[in-house]
Structures are given as C-alpha cells and as structure tokens.
Image 1: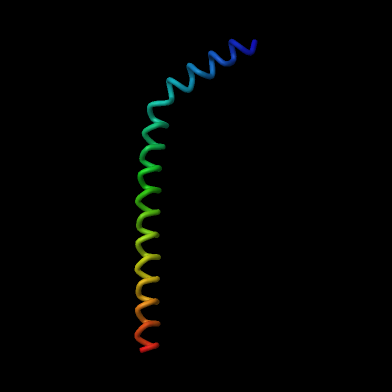
Image 2: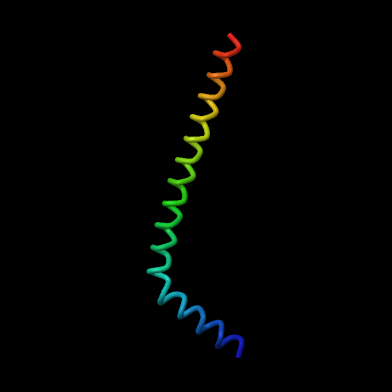
Amino acid sequence: MIMNEMGIKEESSSCSGSQTNNDKDKFIRLQVIVDCYIWMVIIILEFESSHVQRVSII
C-alpha cells in the first residue's frame, strides 16, 4: 500500500512538475528582485539619514 501510494505520488508530481517548477522559478526570481529592491531602498534611506545627521552635526 505505502509503496503504491509513493509511486502514484511520484508520477503525479512528475506530470504536474513542469508547470509548478516554472511558476516556482518565476516566483523565486520575483522574490529575489523584490528583496534586492527593498535592500537598495533601505541602504539609500540609511545613507541619506546618516548624511543628514552628519550635516546637522556639522
């Protein structure tokens, strides 16, 4: 019973794997782009805030 269920699960995952893998790749790429954009914004904001603080101190 367990062996048959595993075999069926493997077949079903391999059949539907092409579309889901493409969707996962697109989602991962989009997530990476969003993460990079967020990090860039954070770095820019930190740089501007530190620059403003330095100017105010001077």
